[in-house]
Amino acid sequence: MQILQLKETVAFMSYRKIAMIFSALLMIASIASLATNKLNFGLDFTGGTLIEVGFEQAADLKKIRQVMADNGFDDAKVQFYGSSRDVVIRLGLREDVKAEMLGNEVLAILESGSGQKVDMRRIEFVGASVGDELAEQGGLAMLTALICILVYVAFRFEWRFAVGSVVALFHDVLLTLGLFSVLQLEFDLTVLAAILAVIGYSLNDTIVVSDRIRENFRKIREGQAENVINISLTQTLSRTFITSITTLLVLAALFFRGGELIHGFATALLFGVFVGTYSSIYVASLVALALGISREDLIPEVIEKEGEDQEIMTP
Image (cartoon, rainbow, N blue to C red):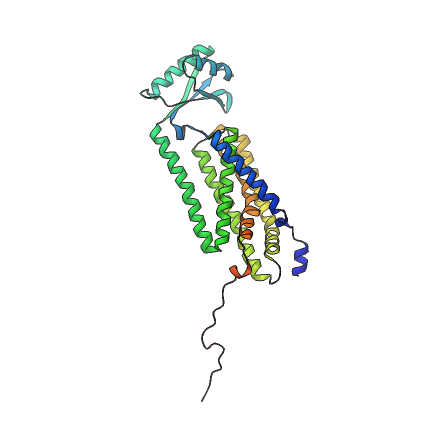
């Protein structure tokens, strides 16, 4: 039975060198982009004013940007919000300026520049101190999650699996941040929530694979660690595939039909599901294999009780 199982096994670990080089290149590219382009933080982190307005007819974004720049708002970021008549304008932090006065000024500029009646939909203001606090708390949340995961997996399985899990999660988070840095997508609190969700999704896949590896190490008495890992990955492949496909279908609906408000959230999760599935197969298992995981590490020691094998003497 074991020989038949080995013949039907997909040799995932035979491609581990290619996967390691591929992951290393992506991580280096992400770090380089984060160091140069940095993240395009939203108002949640930088502070500033968000103004949503509605036009009677389709708005011309280029004309709006030019009008805003001509009136001293060079830092204005203008984009559609749902339809071609709904526009969101993001302005940097301005000291000693009330949000209501700023909104009225922008509204007057837009009406005079476009020749249309413009309705104010909403206006939001975030102070600099609040933005700094949110950025700090968000970073601490991700760090705390990684530390808790490291401790849990170390106790639940084995420290090599714990290191592999944390490396895989760091890989997923770094690549997702790199995507937002390269594309200069806005990074706000919804994206941060999506990254925390990616950590949970990736961890779930890694736990399933680790549990199957441990189980197979105890069942399969012959075979190297690489073969046992290949068998375990093959056995969990259908479950991983079905889970990923169903999740991606929901996220695709959110991405294409969910609107601008959750576009960043859906983008981070879509990409995170891909890299999370990949890392649970190659990164986490590869790290555990590289650290020398073996059958002896996962099979509990049998402690013989004193006098267990001794015959009971009767008078």
